[in-house]
Length: 452
Image 1 (cartoon, helix red, strand yellow):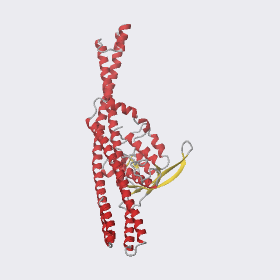
Image 2 (tube, helix red, strand yellow):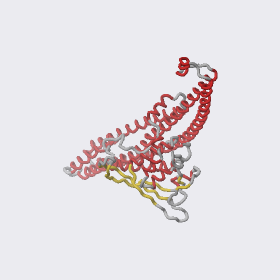
Image 3 (cartoon, one colour):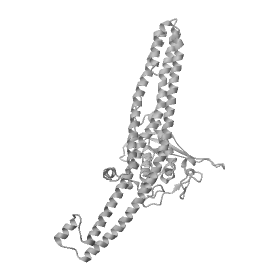
Image 4 (cartoon, helix red, strand yellow):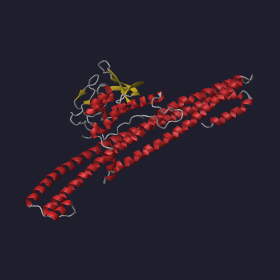
């Protein structure tokens, strides 16, 4: 595979790249990777709805799953051509298959992550059931975001398999499996072995791995704290619902204060109910943080691939050095290190000149091949580092922009919430001041509202 270029599948033609040059999309020849070729400039992509379904597994057992409707719409041209729309249903497992394929064939790319399959960092009001309607809706938004991330990526957006994922409902899995990407996937054991045995790791990728670990740790801690705060905040708001009920009951036995107490109870109920919308909005920002929590693993995947390539390069260099040493020893008749061949020679006598010349010739051919392989691996490694680091820089810019916008929006939301609390307090204040007997109630409200 040539890093940063079109994909070459074993036994297949190189993957055609969709340039979106005609209405509805067509598969054409190769195009130059420019901003104008981004898929999102040619079509609109949305995951518009989710649907609960039942089916049969490969073991003929009944299962319940969620299917998501993907709609793609070509951007209307200036000449007045009609807008064409494709719509098809995909399961979450098909999204996983697509991403696994992208990880294998684009190892130098920080592949966008999928939303969580099961709810994590939940507080007590949220359900951890993956069939819960609220969770399914948040995952629908996350899956749409995943498709938009891929479609806006300068390399991934041009892949044929991704385009077929959006437009070809039948036999798409067979098309993916025909690429043989499972056979090219690196095993976890091999990656772990390379991590511990590589001798000259690239400092930049080592630092990137440490950064991804820290990013995951910080965001995980932030999400855990946010879940605890949500629990406490929910409790504080819902306590006001109890006050609302008490005031309403109290108003029934009071003549002079009845209207004021009834109004106070109503405001308490409204205030208590407002927390549901507030925390629902907060979940949106939590999901944005979770995306970058999962991006940390995508960064580590790039680092693991570099370690594997570096390890293969070092093994190739070591093997070449060993063959050169063997050739030199045969040519000079001296043995520098202990070897089984040297022991055999001592036991059974020296080789004939003809045998030695034949072995030298074989070794020279192997050395020539090894030098070519080493040169090829060096070029491949440099190309990988060049393309990987360019994509990592692109990712960093995206991350800084996204997290800045998310955190600013979250702060604005919190300010708005506090203003609503202040407005509620100012509305309740005249009601409480209507009667001196409500003065103690006012002091209690001041104590509660001071929390905010």
